Image (tube, rainbow, N blue to C red; front, side, top):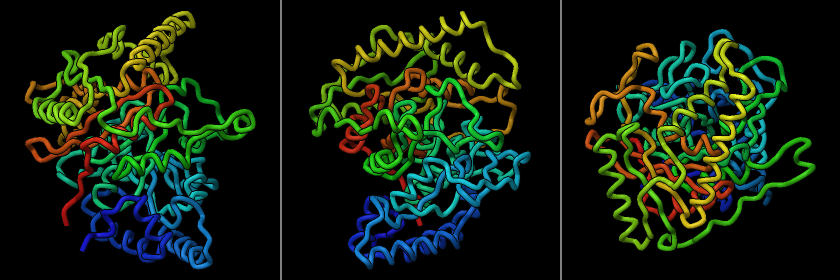
Amino acid sequence: MTDILSFDATDIADLIRRKEASSRDITTQLLDRISAVDPGINAVIASRAESALSEADAADAATARGDILGPLHGVPMTVKESFDVAGMATTWGNPAFEGIVTERDSTVVTRLKAAGAIIVGKTNLSFMLSDLQSANPLYGVTNNPLAPDRTPGGSSGGAAAALVARMSFLEFGTDLSGSIRNPASFCGVFGLRPTSETVPSTGMAPPGPADVPVGMMHLPAVGPLARSARDLRLALSVTAGPENSEAHAYSWHLPAPRHRRLQDFRVGYVLDDPTAPVSGEITARLTETVDTLRTLGCQVVEGWPSGIDPAQLFEDFGFQVEEFFCLDGEGGVSHRDFVVAENRRLTVRAAWARYFETIDVFLCPSSIASAFPHETRSFGDRTVTTDRGVRPYHELFFWTAAATYAGLPAASAPVGLASDGLPVGVQIIGPHYEDDTVLTFAELGPFTAATLPG
C-alpha cells in the first residue's frame, strides 16, 4: 500500500476534496510521523499540534457541508521558522530573540491559511539565515535525512529535510544566495525562487520594530519547496501578488508557460565553469539530463548568454550582498559607486532578456557538490572537498548567484543521485516574470523527488 505521507500536496488536497480522506486523519498521521522520525533529524523545531488538529476538524466539517476553503483545503504543512505565525515564536535561530511570540501571521502564512492550508509547525534554519547549513545555537543542527552526517543545506534546510522525510506536504522558505535552491538540491526535492518581489515578505523579519522599510528587495525572495513542480505552481498561485496600497493599483497573475510540450522547449545550458568547478559526479548526472532532453526532442544550446561574464557577475553579486547586509552597521560605499554597481546589474538583466528571446530556459548546476559533512569551522576557514579538489566554501554560492543578481525565477529540480547516494539538483532559470515556464519545464522534464526509506 502506498504511504499517503509520500503524496504531494496537490494529491492530498484532491483526496480531501473528494472525501476519500479526512484532514484530521492525514494531519494526525503527519504529526505522528514527526514524533517518530524527527528526533534523529531535528527539522521541525516548533509545533502547533493542538491548533492544527482543531483546524483539521474545521476543514472536515466544511467538506461535509460541501464548502471548500481553497486549493489547499485541509492540507497540513510547515513553514520556515523565520515566518511569523500567530502564537509562535519567531527567532531566526538567535537566542537573543528566544521566547518572543508574534501576534500576527506573515503575509505568506495568511494567504496559505486563506487557501485552506493547516500550519502544523516550523522548520529549522541557519542562524539569522546566514549560512548554507541549518544550524543555530537555539535549535541546534538539522541533519540531512538521507545521510545524517551531512547537512540538508540552508538556510531553508529544515524545510527540505521535512519534505524528504515525509514530515510535511509543502513548505515555504526564503532565498537570497540559494537558500531554497541549495537545500532542495541537497535533499532531492523541488524548490522555487520566484521572480523577485513576486511573493510579499511582510512578516518575515527578525523581532524588532514593525514595518521598517528594507532596501534592495530585488535580492531576497520568498518561495515554496515541494515534492513536485505542480505543488510549486499551486503554492505560488495562492501566495503571490501585491498587498496593502499596492494591491489597489495593480494585480498579479501567473503568465502562461511558453510551451506545454517538453519537445517544444529551447534549452540553454552550462554545466561547469572555472570560477567554481563542479564535482565530476554532479556534471555526470547533469550531462545525462541534457542528453535525455535532447533525445526527447528539446533543442539544446550550450554556453553562457552573450554579455554575461560569470566571474564578474559573481564578484558584483558579492558586492550587492555585502551592501544588503552592511554587517554590524558598517561598510557601505558612496552613492556613486552604488549607482555604478546597480547599472551593471541592470545591464546583466538586459543581457538575460535578450537571451530569452530565443531560449526558453537555462540549465546549470544548483551547487558545486552534493550535501557535504556538517561544517563547524569559522566561515573563512571552511572548504568543500570534491573530486575537483578542495574548494573554498564561498564557491557554493556561485551557481545560484546568476538568477538572484538578475531577479529571475529559478527552480532546483532533482535529477538523480551522485555516486555517494546523495541527490543532485539542476537549476532551471527562466525569463523575468515567466515563472510558469520554469515550472512547466520542471513538471514535464525527467525530474523526480527523492524520499526517505521507511
